[in-house]
Amino acid sequence: MLWSDPENKPPKELRDAQDMMRRAGLVLALAMVVAMFVLGTR
Image 1: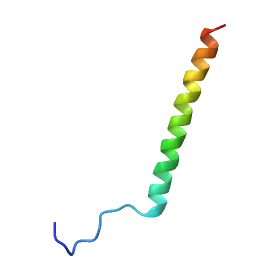
Image 2: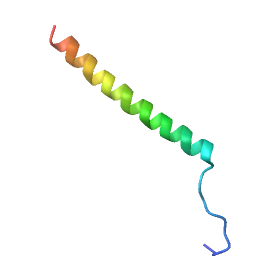
Image 3: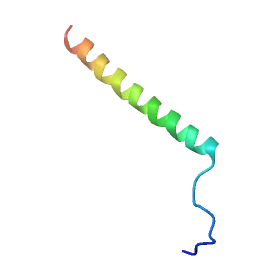
Image 4: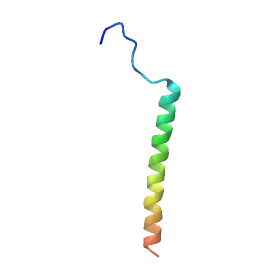
């Protein structure tokens, strides 16, 4: 890799979308755990 190569960073929109998907995945996983717990205690 040469010093003159452009930085290999994704555009800001793509990084924002990835962050949003990561947060959505965490929220979904947490909701699944809570739902399993609620259904298991009935």
